[in-house]
Image 1 (cartoon, rainbow, N blue to C red):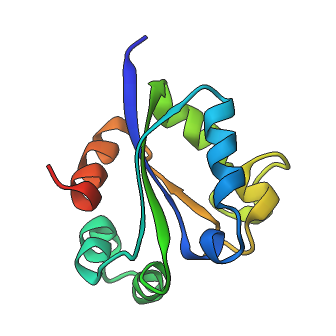
Image 2: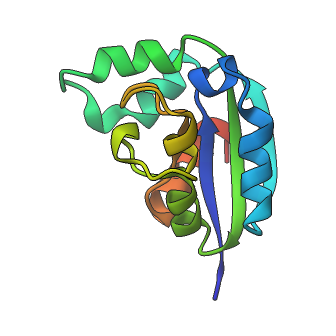
Length: 135
């Protein structure tokens, strides 16, 4: 198996509600490595670059407003099957569908405030890492 990198972000609701430590612990407990981590704000430019494929959709403006509303924790996570492992750890995007024991199942409030973002493919991870951490 090849080591993959994925991009993950603890969203404003996860930071605001004090879930940073538990989320980091869960990532480390499954054997993944946090290679880089930064607490900070998502700029409008980063948000637009990351969510550009949704521009024009009804939820786009709200998404941009939400993701730039407060501090986030940006992370590069690596390990074997890192993308799939993180997707499983996070749970379904809609918190109502997320299994107990997943990050979203345990901490998510709504489909909009679902605690954590994660790349859905290695290609997306490469693009998102460049958006949030540069080349």
